[in-house]
Length: 217
Length: 217
DNA sequence: TGTACATCAGTGAACGCGCGTTCACTGATGTAC
DNA sequence: TGTACATCAGTGAACGCGCGTTCACTGATGTAC
Figure 1 (spheres, protein in one colour):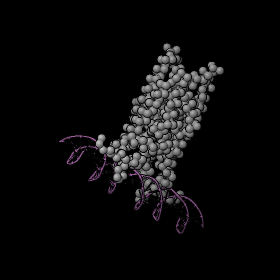
Figure 2 (cartoon, protein in one colour):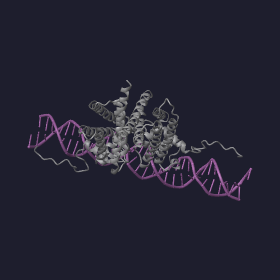
Figure 3 (cartoon, helix red, strand yellow):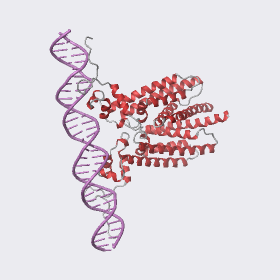
Figure 4 (cartoon, chains in turn blue, red, brown, green):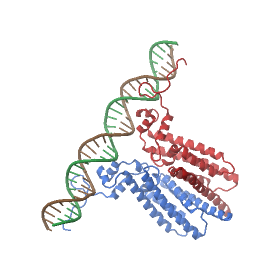
């Protein structure tokens, strides 16, 4: 540590000192919007947004597909952490359903771009990309399923096909979330309310069905 | 009707005698597949598949977006007709739910390409395109809602928030359908079964919730 | 501390390609007389 | 029935453009001595 080097900014020419993977991810997110999907972005656009030469892209990702997958992973991890926190912060007065759905909707606003990737692009794109999205969905299902079982035991209510229940809720919430991204902020509150009711329908449904099943036995 | 003209095939050069709108739609559907989405098709690809010069495209559609919307309309109309028939063909032994879901899943196989457009591309693409998809979804919701009300009256069961119920079911089924397109034929049967249960959860849920509401009053 | 050298994340320039769109054209078809 | 003419759905050729990818390069950084 003898000499103090110049800070890692631009050198003489248009050369960037260093580019981090994270920087590229963030720049890409910045390009996304309600009408700009990941699959419509070009490598050169991403490079431009990051402020690097097009060919520099290859120093970080083999192709655009790899970038897309990295974004999916990021989105999934972020969202699961948030929802997880919401679930365990559940108090007596605020139901699990309400808390989780609200946390989800809140994320929809804060991390719009990130969730866009997860919610809206699961059906287009390469097989690898789709796999990544599917994997995230399954994570959610499993966590939700565990939660449902725990709650059922706690409240001593029945639970008909917990796996299917979890899947139904996950798919519904994600589908709803995808279309909620177009809504104005004012519409968000009522939308959240509606989504809660829908989820509750499913939960009440499973409980009732399990009870009827018991009766039949 | 004096002279018999040559049939409407190729003339001397590479000139097509006539190209119908329908022909273009069908050729475009032919290009779609599990890993080829509408938004990734180029005008020139469509022209090639139709067997016409690229610029001939403009004689039929102002741009690719218009073509996409035409396909959405076609897909929606087709599917609604099929499901409608299924609903009214309901017998005593086969429930409405089961019949409708089965009709839906069957269509998924037969008109795969067409449904691909409707199910998977609703979240990407131009505003006009998205509107078209949303419109179709609402059609479904309304029809389903009317059916639910009719059934509730018939069976004298309650119905909590029929609009929300219809929406929940529609969104769930469409989301499920979208991911079902990747499944192998063998997996279809069990998937249909699962989907039926999910839908039934929602229906049982609303019925129970309406009953509890009555009790409270 | 200084020097020589290897590494490798950055770059500019260039490539060939498929794209959407335009233009002026052509020739089949229908219509008026 | 024949002729003259308008219409318009088809076309080939050409345009400029942004794309993904390649190449040989450069210069900052770390390491060995």
